[in-house]
Every structure is written in structure tokens, then in C-alpha cells.
Length: 391
Image (cartoon, rainbow, N blue to C red; front, side, top):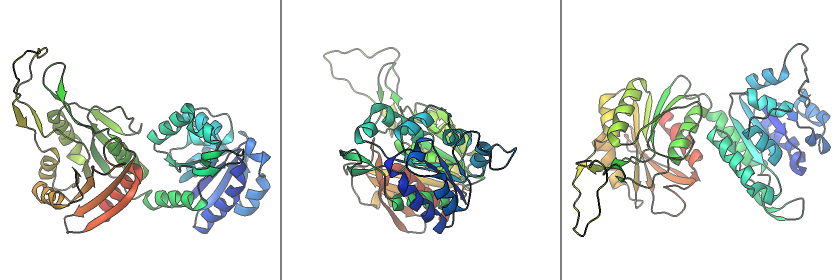
């Protein structure tokens, strides 16, 4: 596989030489692109000797005369790694600026990108930098978070380049899953549903849609065509995913059945309301001194209906439970006739609703119990989809 290694102007640029060598030892063909500032720390000759390939710097560099290198490298790369990535380059990529060879290659690629930031801690936590990183994540970039420690300027905080092993692990994970879902259609339900009481109020839950975003990104990184049926959320789904917006459980059912007609995998990550008001009141229910009774009726079981309607698809459910016990998950697996079900204990701090991490236990139809361990939600999503492919 081909890797383009982008090196930015950070004191940590010297570590990119070892990273290039580590990537090559892991079987990758590596080509390096330096920013102008990176040349203050390392030289093109260093990487050309290490990799045996030309090193690009200027936007108009053409190792092959008559060939536009930024297009060739962008299209030939299976993965692009930017390590170290400075605040300047991160913000430029996030806003679509292509004013040097590296940012131009990134603009021209459709391949997954691994970004390993390295900078002063205050620059890292700056609102603009954080917004840029979150935007890049929404576009399916993998962010290898910097470590906390003493940085070159003498300050202490989160800003040190992650270890080369962490960066290599992220690349290896992508490489292992890069083509496993090519030609497949993955449908994902995501977020909460809103069940209207009247024209103003509704019943809902705390689901943020972050797990659905992670699953969509992971499926795209693995080569799938992705459709997301999403309840109302504020998170941003990957741009290349088809997103169908719904509000109620009934709308989600119709949209999921429509999307699932040619689906290979359907994952029910949405937190669907179990009940809805029997009657939606027009206008607004006014307050009075009298007590108010609200009659609720059950909503349809979306993922069970999909599994029954499309028995040829691999249908995977989620069970968000207030404990680590798996009895409920196993019962749901059987009752809904699923290929597998992912259980997560939402009572644990730091995982579950509206958090950036999760911890899944996958129960399969064959009776296997597989544990992801605590990972980022994207890490959990990649792990889950990899298990589903193996099934």
C-alpha cells in the first residue's frame, strides 16, 4: 500500500524520519512531502535516502515531467499521514486552503487521512484549532491525539506528538480495514427520535448521534457506500454519506426500510423512543391546576422489522443498558432475529450518550461474546464493523 507522509514545521519533524522507516518496515511504500517550514528542521535528501522516492516541497514540483505530482500522489495514495501536523496546516486543510504541495495533495485526495498534531498546548486547545480538528474528523480523518508533557517552548500540557507506535497503529488499523467493505451498502440508524405531544413539546432521549457518526465514518473508511437515517442531532455526518433526516420512530421505520432494500449491513445505533403519544394535540397543551394524563402507545421495533423484511442482510442492533449484564442483550438478539447485538453500559462514566468514548460487548448469533475495550467511538466503530465482516 502507498502512504504519503506529510511533514510540517514542528520541532517534532525529526521523528518523521523514524516514522517513515517504521511504515516501510510494516510493508508500506512511503513518499514524503515537506512544507516550507519543515525544511527548517529536516531536509528532502534525508527522506529521499530513507524511502528511495522523491520528496516533494514546492507546489510545482514534478518528479515526472509533464505529470502533475499533486494529482498523481493524491490518487495513488492509499493513506495520507500528516505527522507532525502543525496548527497552521490543520486549520488550512479544514478550511480548504491549498497553498503548498501538502495541502494541495490533501484537497485532491479521496483517501483516508491520519493527522497527528504537535504544537504548543495553548495552540492545541485554541478554539480555532479544536474546531478545525472536529471538522476534519467529521470528514473521516483519524486524529491521533497529542500527548501531555513538556514541549519545546518549555511549557507543559497536551501538545507533544503522539508516539510513533500510536501513529503506526492508526495507519495499520486503516490499512487492515481499507477495502473490506468495497462494493457494500451499509445502512445506519442514528440519534434519537422525537415523538410529538403537541406542536411544541415532544418525548425524546439523550442520544447525541456521535456513535452513528463514528459508524458512518468507519464504514466509509472501509470502502462502503453509506446511508444514515438520522433523528434530530447537532453532529455532522461525513459529507459523502447519504443522510436521510427524520423525527419520529414511524418516519425512521419508513426511511430505514426504503434504504435497506439493497443493504448488505444494517446497524441500528439510533435510540428510538419505545412509546409515542396516542394523540398529538394541535397547537399547545395549556397548563392548568388539574393533573394531566398522557396515553402512550408502543412504537414499532425498527431493527426487528428490518431483519424480518430483509433476511439476506446482516442486521446488527445496539443495546444501551444501565449495567454490564448481557441477559437483556441476548434476549433482544433472539427476539429480533439479529446477526449480532452490541451492548454498552451507559451507567459507566465517560462512555455512552454524548461522550467521545465507548466500550462495546458484541454478542453474536453463534453465541460468541467479544469485547472492544474502551476506545474512541471511531475506534469502537472500526472494531465493530471488522467483527461484522468476520461474521
